[in-house]
Length: 406
Image (cartoon, rainbow, N blue to C red; front, side, top):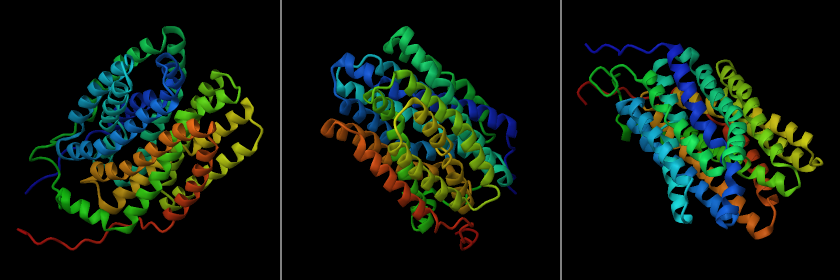
């Protein structure tokens, strides 16, 4: 009789997983700070920079599906180490772009692949398999909060590095920091991963995918996550330039991104904790609707540093707070055997939204000289996401038992 593989301690999983996400997400949240230094140094328009980061988000989502499959099959350790190496290579290549194509390949494809192997889908797979369901949503909230703390910690650091070392040397320092993910991955090495001691799977990957894509709630979660990607990446990348265009200093933008990260530490933790007690679909609908209200009020109010900081605090509470309830809902419905892969598919939808948000931000700015249209789209999409999350069914899917030997 096959016995279950031993589990890692919850403290070890959360500590190492949180540090991995802190580094990976912390580095990527500051990329908007490089928009003006790189475009001015290279003589590019904003669309060129935006398109490269749009590719990054699309590559992250697409490659994340396969990274999730590998992590489910062979364990997260190998995927995390590969992701750390790709991150360092991508950041180093981003520092010396000879032309827009090279910039798109390094800052886009390489860093996107790195993020696919070092962020939530991979870490959440370990959390889902190693931490009991009674604490799973809370634990996912802790990991998401760590990513937010990374934004709070790293964005001011990156602004300081750019100011003191120049934008190229700042990227090289970040490349060295990304390599720290590899030793941290040792703490997420699951016992028996990829061996005969691994937990028995009742479904193949194809069966799990077929089941998920035929289930309406999975499709609704994907639709909502598309909106999440559109909103947060547009704001994260383009808000620094939006504020500078309006006459505010670069420090205001840096502080704004840091405030978003700090408040999201609390927002994601609270969302994860509430997910253990309340209907996750209602939590998600409230988050998306709240974002639309926050953006609308931000555009209506007079633009001052104070209004920027208030908006950043509110949107920060709602920033990545969708992540714990979304992933916990997937685990509740389909189980944890293929959690990284299914989470990767939902996240791919998120990254298509990210692609549209960051690319349209640059494209429409270059065409109209304003970000207004994209702000209005973000409001409308938030209302749409709130509506489509309400019908999601969170209970475990009913499966027909498979006869022995079938």
